[in-house]
Image (cartoon, rainbow over all chains, first blue to last red; front, side, top):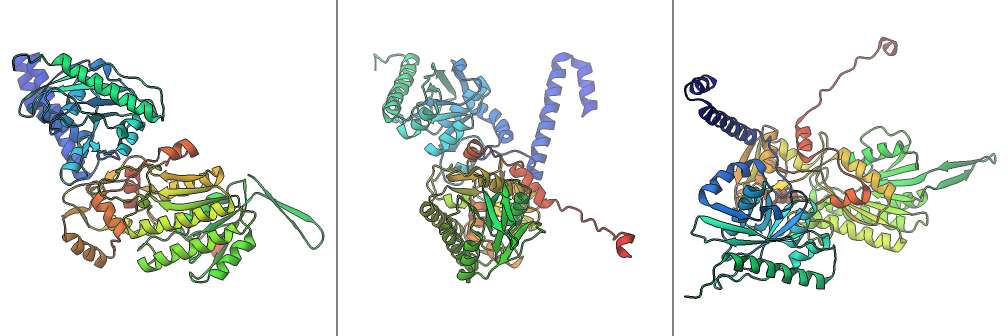
Length: 237
Length: 340
């Protein structure tokens, strides 16, 4: 390998050198990945997330989707945050949200989208999703992670975002975690997705049901506003 | 919290033993013996008394031990009342297929809890109770949280989980009657190199059955960390349940591969065949271990860190590694002086 690399570098210069070193790194990475899985020397977190596997899956997801992300600075660089995003059918949105945010910010988003059903649930959990349960959200936020919550589905009404589930928001409000509105704009059959990330809604830690209901309305309105801003008005049809 | 116990000798000399009187049920188990060993080093602990159906698994220097038969409730009650404990550490919880058959474990868990905790309630000296429970009480019903914390209501889905919940309920009633704090330590599956455990035996089989449709994660606790957790809880005397789990997790396939074992994918009715085969190979598969292998078992241990300031020193992956590492036994020759 090194002999081949040396002769190639000598022939074509710095650009090829970079390509070869990246290839070598990829080769070593692949060998390390496979060896790690065979010997069991890899890390899995308590929710089942396998960071090494997610790193392998990222290029595959980018083959399927491309992301245009704006407002990435609104995602906190460290500490917990709850991203609240819209969804239509909800098949692509969990992975689009997670992959888009990772590409733009480098942070992994634990989207509450894994069903408790083999084979889909375990695979999604291995890629970073967590079970769709309020208790799971509490644990993820308490661990300092970025969580992703999808609003209710809106299959028929294009351009309208669904309601936020107060059971889920209650834990975020109780912990005083910033709520970040995210508009997901794209189609199940399309490749390109736009992610518009809005200004975080920062709340004082409270256990008041009224505060939770207010937060649910506010974050839903914020997502709707982002969707409206990014979608041109349809006057003609 | 610290207390003194005074007594008078025949000659009229008054002696005072400063320290808390601690009763350990289940002292004959690996965990009970280690807790007793740790307590013996503590200056705040006075007299230590232990009861169990088996003798301790190590040498104890200043603890007294009482062996009892499982059905002999009168003797158990008498031992507890005569000792007049201030702190009761109820570790007499018997895991099915660890050292007891499932039927014997169920009967012992119930009868020992009733005898020990019931008798302790009558002692005016009682100040606190610590009970060994397990994260099996949360169950793994479909749709239930994968990583429950203490706010999640127990909903056991296995026989051992139900037994642990029964012990918790007996302890809760006893602590309420005595008006003392009760700490329910919900331990992750406790493993160690020499711990009799159905999960430990399963992990050591050359071929380990794993779920073909999922590779769920589970968390463990090393027996030394479990013993330290009991010690810290005995000193802190807080009220309520606390999950005690190691950091991180391993999957079933990963655990098998860490020990160089071969994972055998199993699905549906094949699990019955797998259970039969593992039983024949000396590793019976009780339903709580089967559930762990098929559905995983983790819990959130953040509250223990917050309340007790306790976090296990070994990660789950370290615990798995250690059960495959057999320490070399050093056979020491007797010295000439001793031999002579």
